[in-house]
Amino acid sequence: MTSTDLRTDQPHSARMYDYYLGGRDNYAADRAAAGRAIAAFPSIIVIARSNRVWMHRATRFLAEQGVRQFLDIGTGIPTSPNLHEVAQDVATDARVVYVDRDPVVRAQAARLLSGAPEGRTSFVEADAGDPASVLDAPELTATLDMSRPVALSLNAVLHFLPDDLDPYGIVGRLVGALAPGSYLVMSHVTADFDPEGIGRAVQVYQSSGIPAQARSKAEVERFLDGLEIVPPGVEVPHRWDTDGLAEASRVTADVSDAEVSCYVAMARKL
Image (tube, rainbow, N blue to C red; front, side):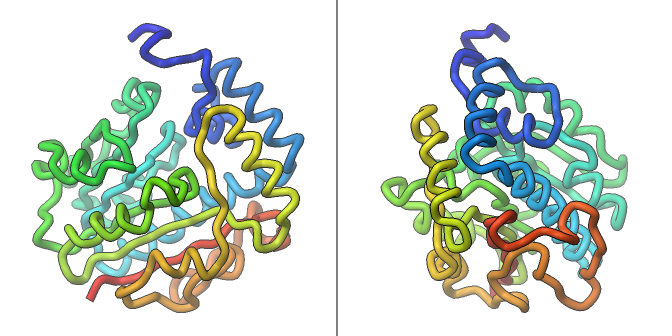
């Protein structure tokens, strides 16, 4: 794989996220853009780490509820524990398909495919904005039984799909392909609590060539239309709690709504 394939001269959201989490799979352009985003909104690191904790908690909760299939779109660069490690810690036969379009994630895919032998993991190189490329991928159909419930993870993805890309239609097509009893799990950046700070951060992404759009609570709730929302509904991650999910966290225990500036939600397809 060449640097041209990776486009190391242009920042990428997955590699910027890796930088926020303290990873090393990023390049000078990513670090420069991430530095500008941190200067614009210093708590962007809190958002990234809170999102990571949310993914762990939601995955564990669903595995404990009996979900054995997971479709993680917008995987990002592997950071242990990855989703399959959390799910297979509860149920070794859990199956996980990871989806991302970044060549760096593809290059690191081996780290995502080393799950428990009783289960199975696979990687699909596809774009979240193109549901057909995900749903028609042979790796997906070879790993997941789409006639049975699947947990669809869209964490920290949808704010990179502005309205002109029809994000609601994209989510509708993805959820429409899932069996009854499946779940949608998501997180999304919002400007509800610090519009100026988040506005500056969004501008950094846009000026770096990365489409981005923060959304209000009402706009996030719209992604869940037609689904049975798991209480407490659309909420900031440090207050999203339900029986069996409570978990103290050094990352999210003492943060304000403005610092975390994102919503999380989980909903079930009837």
